[in-house]
Length: 133
Image (cartoon, rainbow, N blue to C red; front, side, top):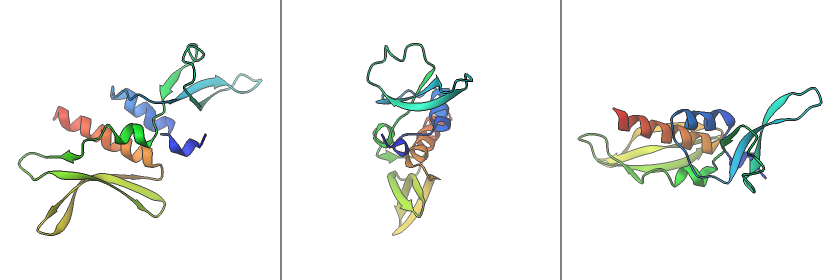
């Protein structure tokens, strides 16, 4: 399993803290990995949730899990709709909403991160916060 396909533990925790629960095939779980009893987080695939019943677990979404939760269009108040966009800029992935006005691209909101899933998560959290305003 390529761990870079999934959100980091920090981004996954932010989703949970915001009450956003995504269906995912992988979880961060806290397991004892040393004889000294040190607990560390690791990502595992969801093969049998009953096996994970006794572990602390946090969903670890992949890019597709978050991408399908984002609306294609975002319409701020009294403005034209912006479309969902994602691009790779060097080592970073930038995701956000932008609109075209008189042939010029205008970014409504964007986030960038070296982990594409984390960038998508920040956008998803931002959208949730927009609902509350």
